[in-house]
Length: 228
Ligand SMILES: *Cc1c(COP(=O)(O)O)cnc(C)c1O
Image 1 (cartoon, protein in one colour):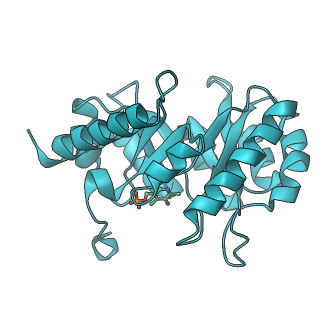
Image 2 (cartoon, rainbow, N blue to C red; image 1 turned 90 degrees about the vertical axis):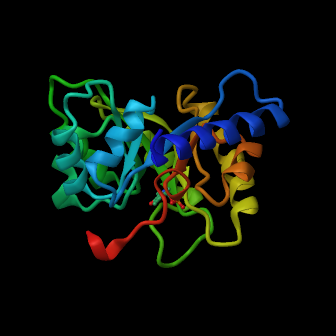
């Protein structure tokens, strides 16, 4: 067994243990393997070990990997990185999910560029839950207004929320996200997804209702940005 398959097995083992401890029986969270900066061969290894959902941060890289791995027809691509308007087309054409919607303009472009032959693009609103000046995401107070606008866009499907807490503030942030998610679901009952928790803080995210956890380092090892 290769290293990625082993790490993946361990990640699922840990997830299952934590779910048991928290009495999460039905609706276990989806584990997203975050493969940014890793080669397609690493994704193929994870795929052959049973993984289907992958997260990517850069539009060009997503498009290249989707093309290189198109023989694996049931891979589900999640775009989780910051998105500029001049790159929306690549994402509209290759992603199944976008976790990082933080403005109407981006949503409108994705909606217009989504190919007719593809199903609706599932989207999450990214919330700047720790109110960091330099970070992506909308303020919590802007959530419902953006949700209302996005719900009008036929080729997008509003599925829920995503957040990346400030370092050291995961617990407070996850609790606040759970409250926001309940608020969103009162108006949009199908927007049930809560994408939160990474390699370092996913066990806490589980305690606050995460439905998708995003693990990079825990599966693929440390990222080497110099080698990109
Ligand atoms: C890189 C990244 C992850 C994975 O982070 P790890 O700490 O390696 O698990 C998760 N979510 C987002 C949005 C990321 O950019």
